[in-house]
Figure (cartoon, rainbow, N blue to C red):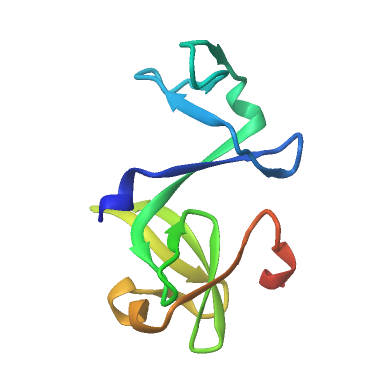
Length: 124
């Protein structure tokens, strides 16, 4: 679970994952680190970016699984999403035809095959 607090940032304007370093402050604002040698930061418009958190689990190849990933389990593609309902808060793998699958059932054979931004065709 040491990867649980890793994040990645999807840049909507460039339609790619950003390779910059970011900081999220206590107000939830996204700041980009301009230089590794100076403490230069600039505030970003959060609406241009999607912040995706690692769920704290890895696929069968050892790759960290993030919110927004598309994973394959038993020949079915699932989207990794955050859910909040009733007393449950957490990540689930969901498919519009097959519903949700518990992580404990799928971890031994789950593989990341893409993500919702770069591979939306996988969900059709």
